Amino acid sequence: MNQQSEAARIHHSVLPRETLEFLAPRSDGVYVDGTLGLGGHSEAILQASTPHGRVIGFDWDAAAIEKSRERLAQFGERLTIVRRNFSEIGEGLTELGIDKVDGILIDIGLSSLQLDQGERGFSFQRDEPLDMRMDIRREVTAASILADCTAEELADIFYYYGEEKQARRIAAFVVEERRRQPITSSKQFATLVARAVPKAFHPKKIHVATRVFQALRIAVNRELENLAEILTQGVSYLRPGARFCVISFHSLEDRMVKRKFRENSKLTVLTKKPIMATPEERELNPRSRSARLRVAERI
Image 1 (spheres, rainbow, N blue to C red):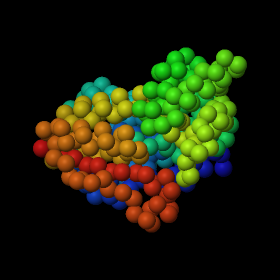
Image 2: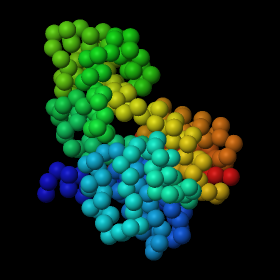
Image 3: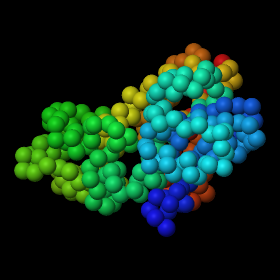
Image 4: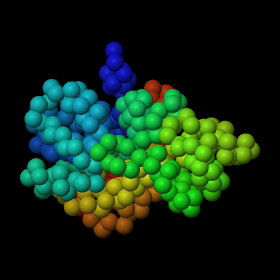
């Protein structure tokens, strides 16, 4: 079995039961899966909305689209795939002639395919090219950010997107290292970060480079800007009573979702606190441990 097939086989969607309960798919409904990924959530929505419910799946990762198209082929024309980021929901729905939908779901975490593919440097478990683009059509890569940004710009990325307290020191080490040689691989960068951060400040539960890798990925893909856009723009495409479900995986995203939902006068917040994975799900799928689901309803 090839690597992509294996990734699809072991893929577990996060918070599937809780998401379906809030989304409440109907047979006459049209739903947006803003992060199609390997198709787990879309499959659940299509099954729950049988026989006529539709899903419009957005994703900009060509490899993920290929796998999800194969996985969801049985649903035929009930699934429409749009190769766009979810921030472009307006353009995507307009092209399809759709002005309102009955629910929107966004799962902002990396898919198993992206983590396991071994080609784009999302993980430092193996030595991979330092790319981190979810859409390979984009020009900016993690390596180009490390090569081109000033020490101050790098420190801001590491601090604001990764909440990394050693951001300035790591940035200084990057600038010094790139004078000697380009920083182009995940292992090379992870090793550099470990060297930059004094041992006394190495976290006990995660790798010392985890937050900096997160920060680079967010910067490369403009993740917070895209999230802000969908949280603002997506509401206008919801019918009254339709639900907006967002699964986030770190505090930066979760705080934004919480604030945007509360500030929007067209929404009623249904989750006072984020919904977390059960102990059983966390045991089955370790990646669900940091997942947080927030839901709002269109008034």
